Amino acid sequence: MIKQAIIPLAGLGTRLLPLTSVFAKELLPINGKPGIEYILDECINAGIKEVIFIISKKKLMIKNYFYNDKFYKDIIKKKKDQRIIKEYKKILKYKKMIKFVFQEKPLGTGDAVLKTKKFIKDKYFLMLLPDDLIMKSNCSKSMISIHKKYNSSVMASMKVNKKDVSRWGIYNIKKNIDKNNFIIKNVVEKPSIKSAPSKNAVIGRYILPKTIFKKLSKLKPGSGKEIHITDAIQSLIDENYRFIGHNFNGKYLDCGTMKGYINSTLEIAKI
Ligand code: G1P
Image (tube, rainbow, N blue to C red; front, side):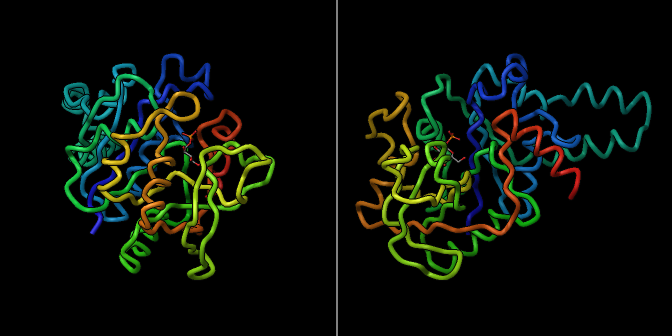
């Protein structure tokens, strides 16, 4: 069973400036609800029991959002507003399952994952990147069932336009399992259009093996001087670890760019 999830949240959110100059992008409301709550709801519905948030001092606002008990209690004491009581209960439910670890320097997703090493208990864990919202169908849940069936690592994926390949991790297929699941041959981080092995992009949901920590601790920074999770995955594939690319069913929304963020609100309002 996959019971733990990790969520890297220490990124600076420069693609969403000026909104992120004083505000954590993951708390920005999308149709009246902070982006991070959509991600937490996906985890809860997929059976996750503990979520590890990787934050930095600059993102303490995220911790405060879940640890504002006195504020809520004082207001609820003064006026017994049912809506506020309900919202506070929801926050308490989230808070119970969240642990915080710190990544002080934004050295990439791989480095963020490494910070969770001593908290991961089981052989596999889930990682969700909060820029990627997947609506209408629980991507984590379907990845967990693929993981159970094939006892291997899984990454969410979708086909993208050739002109956009340099925005994503891109993988090549070794073998088709069925219409939506593929054994991955190799994966590269943000290739140029010329060097991209395909148009199969990795989207921000991963079921990773605990062994990835060993690889991450040995990795040297790659492009942009960051430690990329993609490079650690490739070195596991080189050692014959099986990674499955899973084309998910839901609707993908990119909340990490201004255009995508605005569009997410419009799309979610329609659901
Ligand atoms: C990260 C990964 C990339 C993946 C993407 C999905 O990139 O490094 O391989 O395709 O998430 O959103 P980032 O969005 O952090 O630039």
